[in-house]
Length: 229
Image (cartoon, rainbow, N blue to C red; front, side, top):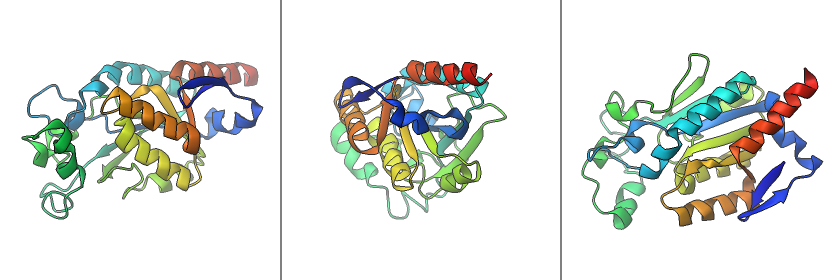
């Protein structure tokens, strides 16, 4: 098994076996909903680079389910009246992100409960788990994700989705601070741009956990499945 460490492929030794046990692992898929992925000028917080990983994420989730690995879908959902964001104390990105990308005309509609912008784009199967009250950057805040994972006896989280340099990175930090083992799938996350994506993955690899390719992780899980069959 090889991991990406500061952008370089490195062989892992057996000391990382606890990171790679599918029985204690959940895939946590972050913010793959229309509010980021819709190909429309009305998209309230566009993440166009992440559209490329919708189908690969669906394929990875299918393979994970087949191996008995739990899949948790997390999405941002704000109260319909905006009271916990745009009409309360707005999230910082609403003011800072437009400095880079320019005005976002429909930004106030982002993630509002009951709107089309909270519709999943990746496929959610009946047996999957859902966390649908993410209100800021981390999948742990202010949600019940930690309670859900601990109740399922999960000790490793495998992250996919977007943005690599924002919600994925924040979730990786929070997961690490909650003592979960963290894996980020290099090929199934997308950042604001390739530079920030690479920087975020480098930070994960140095301080928070493992950066892996999804094919390598699946191959390892399958080898374990054959061994225990």
